[in-house]
Image 1 (tube, rainbow, N blue to C red):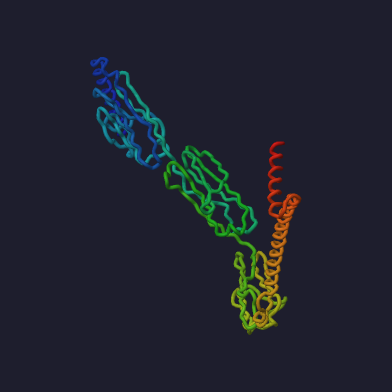
Image 2 (spheres, one colour):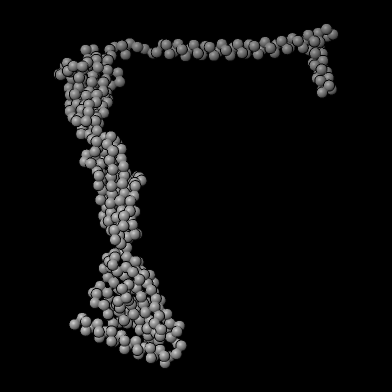
Length: 400
């Protein structure tokens, strides 16, 4: 039955061509200015592609679309290839538009629009099909990792066309990986590797592999893995009092960081057990000593451990007598030092001022002596000295 349909269509096409050739001959040169116009089309795999062929000033000459295998898809408004994905959108003497739904990579290629003049005129349109990359996967993540380990994270995505791009992020900050691209038929497999020296700061960090591709527009695909790192504990002791006094209570906290969490912690005093459990209360990581006294003086040690190691910290306690704080008045040594500095500065000022006054007084006496020989009194002597001084200045100016 199918063979019969193809034969009938071939016969129809042949007769149609013969009729059009005759009509073209009768019209002479009128059809020589007719050319089909097409455009290249790019579509994402799985979507619909519309192929349009137009002719300006057509003289009722038929249009035809053919696929890359040169199979006729539509001749005018007549469907030639039995493919349910191919539908007629618009057919007229000036336009033939068809649609191909659920486009696959095998549909890619050069399509031909033919205008059945004499001779037949053609135009090509290339259909490009974008291969959508698959959701990426991250491999090589140990669960958990151990501080100091060298690990390699690998992100892979399949089926992209053209080859996709892979980007790495540590939390929100982008970091660089090593990219590798391999062709697989019409599509590409893309891998990116990231080498890490793991430390405790990586614990809880999210590593993101992001795939960017033209077919994904503004919605890139991602894979996220949160790194769990095991590490030995580190310990420090915090205290509630700076100067603990007798009668007060003191709280010591053992701050330990490790993974797994180092619970419980162990408190000791001077290398042994806590001596007074009635006043020395341990609750979780805290040690509280109530009603401090001099017997509590000593070195307190906190120790925390997990399967990766042990860490400890020490706090030296000295209990002060509250009466000593009350008897201590103002800091006399400090006050004495300030007073000494003030006295020293004052003496320096007096000495400098005395030298200044003595120098000016000597000048006065010298000037008076210069005019004293010929002057009847002290005032006249000073005036004479000033005159002699001015005369000396005139001489200086003359010699210069």
